[in-house]
Image (cartoon, rainbow, N blue to C red):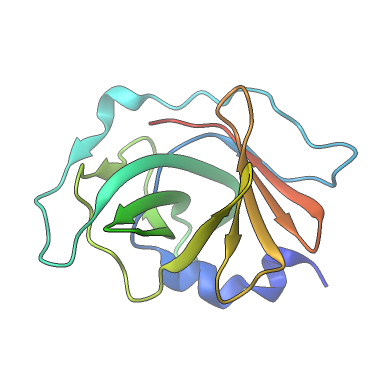
Length: 151
């Protein structure tokens, strides 16, 4: 089953926070790494929340949108010894992020495993940052998304 269809509900719930990068989804043999044109000068900080962490990075996923047509980005946040990945939504190039973003209840904890990260609740989901800063997302070993880092 297609990764994005399988997790569409969770991805749409995520529509709260993450790092920005232009992202193309494809199979592992044809994944694109072309740079998307996202104006990072319009990224505006938000005030810090009580349950917040440290922003590690933001990657834009231009292959999926929320049910309202908003763009979705993934944000990686560290809090203490834990690391989370969560989704946020934005319209156009108006992405708002915070150095200490709130950790959404729908955020997924990930753990470092060698040169990549693995989902704690879903170990079949793995994440790796390549030499260009792209966030590579795998499901059961298959590359499902290549996201360019924005922050």
